[in-house]
Image 1: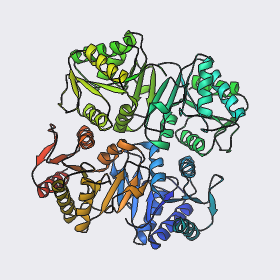
Image 2: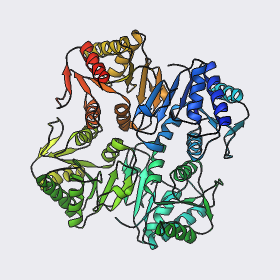
Image 3: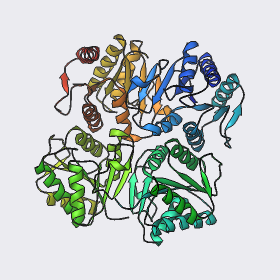
Image 4: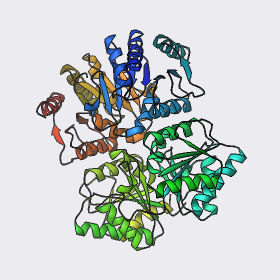
Length: 153
Length: 153
Length: 153
Length: 153
């Protein structure tokens, strides 16, 4: 298996500022030797995947639709679930820990599913304050915390 | 098709007080001629289904596990998804509107998925305050609001 | 729980002759007090559900698409999975036994999934000869065999 | 995206002879620059993934269970669906073409699902003769046929 699988979750459309942050998260994941997992579409998902590719990393995109051609251009390995939002449960099941970057209701559903099955979730610029999600301020901190957590499991 | 499908969501274990409230929600759904849909297990799910049966209603349980024998005794029609928490997406897709009764992370994931696809969600005794979820105080109000909403769609 | 859940599987478009046979299967299921489960769409699914309603039975339709409005008019309880062909696995998991009426590749996938998890499958006018599927000649025999099987389990 | 995604399907337990054949299929997929996709478990799945790794390829395993630790040791990127046999639909949706190596009912379900959505399926030593599945005799032929098909699409 390649490095640990870190999920990055966030909205399919986002501000330039949030995209920069997501890209930095992606870069940091790749620098640390982890694999980036996301929902494979645009916004935070594309920015994070782009960041991982900037730093020579590997990206996995688990898509809601029926075809792998929907993946953003930074996805190395697309998975077409054809299951709509139920694919969120597969992202959460597969990721060893998750980093949320801003995000709306879809992201909230993933945070909740992750907490339900006991996975670590950290959040940058969260829209929702959810007990159990650790708020962090920088991409570097976000990645360091989730990787440390995996090391000690 | 039988009456409108109203989803009742909540935790698989709950206090007696929350169970009474869920049972009243179930009764009111049945009295108004709607079908109760839930996750088919214990706690709020069993209490709501029991309430619907008290009032002569019909109950549908969409289960996370592989077998229909896991359904609580108040479920008329069980569906075994064998998909774990991904079954939450099926509950939300099938229900025409949802009523949350208290609830933990699983319920939060369902509220978020419902809001993501534009379904009405009302909440009794919510653990989480989520923008877009209407808080209500009584079972009667909860059912009246969601049925009125369906009538005007 | 209402009576045993018997799945009827077959293509979404079929000849009038196959539809008559499916309708007779649906009628017989209802006459024997079982609940008819199908994929909720047209062809064999609609004919079987219609037959069950002719005889005063109850029908459950597990749909591939995102909305319950896709159900045929003979479905009492629709479930919208939004999972395309993956809903076939839910049909097979939920049905206590299955009756195939003619059918194409979709039906073949359901027969295979059912055999994989050890469920009884009988077939009327099968397109494919699959080891483990019992071929039967009449609707009455099909229903009698699957209900006898459940009684002795 | 890395090279084309070729699915290899087959049983979770197999003879040494079938394993050798699956391994040769995996090797050939990697030699031709494609990514091997399989169900991530043992038997044909492990042998094919091992073959791909022998030849320096990349392997994706889409698992039925809840955890990535169930993947065989030759899987580079595991996906944990927690959806049992419904994961077969995700394999078929994701693969651009499929090669079956022997196989039982699970493999039959995947062949049927693939044909249903119009994907190319070739089979080595098929247990079932299904119209629409092209029978081939060597690993080299199997891979050449599916890659040629993708080139001309």
